[in-house]
Length: 633
Image (cartoon, rainbow, N blue to C red; front, side, top):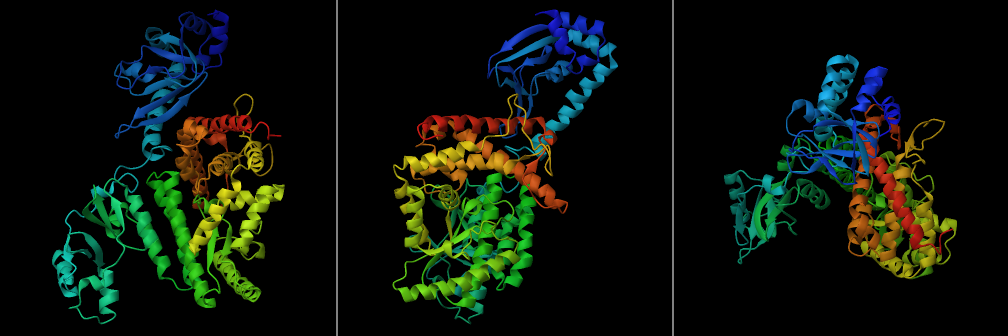
């Protein structure tokens, strides 16, 4: 080492910058230097304590601890000029964290004897070390692990880490199909339960009878209580596995509008999980919102209920839920709201003259909604048999979609600025016209055609005749086969949106205006990942529309996704959750949610994680350029 270079380096590194010239030079003379190749474990949790204070000259390290479940929880990243190793050195106890080189890393080492002399003789030096490596560091460790761990966080006893087997009723109360309604009711009263399982002669569960069935099918209709219980049992039986987490049960209860669900272990019935069990677990259940929605029969009744849906986000954030879990729940609730508006419209205008399917587009189609988004929807209807029927269909849907648009607006869904809504006749068409749209877009990929394709190719059936949407999806997959030119245009769009990282790995932010010093998480983070994974999904004919489901479907069939699947999932989860936290914070103080964050207000962990996500996007964009090099311009 050249002494002058070492001194010059330390002059810009706290706390060494607080030392006088003589003390700094003395410390520099006593330094040694070590090189750690990428992925080297420098210090290991529960291993021997550090024998030196390490100052990073070049490269960087990742600091992690093992959680109670054995998972490695990343709590910090350190880079050039940062120090590490003092906690275990001072405590003389076993190392509390695992520290791994994330790049080829060079460190200066100051031995503990010299460090102790500096601590005893330089109060400013000592105060900085205590503040940055003890109080601040330990506080941050607990905060990252227990309050805001962006990768693994959640309380052990709550919705997203509690397995269904831990919550389900273990004692199964059952009756045979030949039992009477009275006998089933007596069993429920005797055991103080809200449901009984109905078994057939072979001992297999064939149905369930709940207290709601007793009220609605027996009492309300004055049914003879000596009738067989099988006449009032509910079918089909919805089941979950004991190893599933409770949020999976919530999703299925909401989807099927039920309050009881069978729990299966290795193919055998092991218990029943109820809405009441879940409410006891989490204090408040998204099912209550679904129930409120279901009971409404007018738009006026839906409006106050729709406002409550955003409160679910706050509940899920408190529980440390992953972004994908949050969006699943919110999508289910918003889907139910839209379906309810459509059902109210059908009652008002009568059944449509032809079968139709209401499809969601964009983030709705990908099931990646956070808070309410624009009305990005369309209608596919069955091909009419005659011209006269076409005119009748047009008249019906003109009134129908106008009512739905207004109803959704009143429930908090603003109209799409680009008019991607079925009130626009262009996006309310028979199946044959939709197939022609796809054919035209693929064969002549103009800028408008590509914009339409990016919006519509994420379509998902939400209400009505789902077979129409599935037919169109099958047609789309066939139309894209061997269409390298069209896919090349999509590839060009996927690489044009480069991440906001400058030459020196600093964030490129807005230079002026309302969002000065901020960057757009949706445009620069979420959108590139969505575009990349959509491109790969269309290449392979994947039917799924959500980004994470597409990644899962591509793991075994796409070479790039095979290599980067875990990184894709982590990057997408991280950016989405950062975005949700940001938007919820804005809503909590009465503001309007946006996608702009100031990277200087992020923690070291968050900054490093978002840079890793941006680096992944850049890496894969380079691979796309190589993959489509003859079609990239």
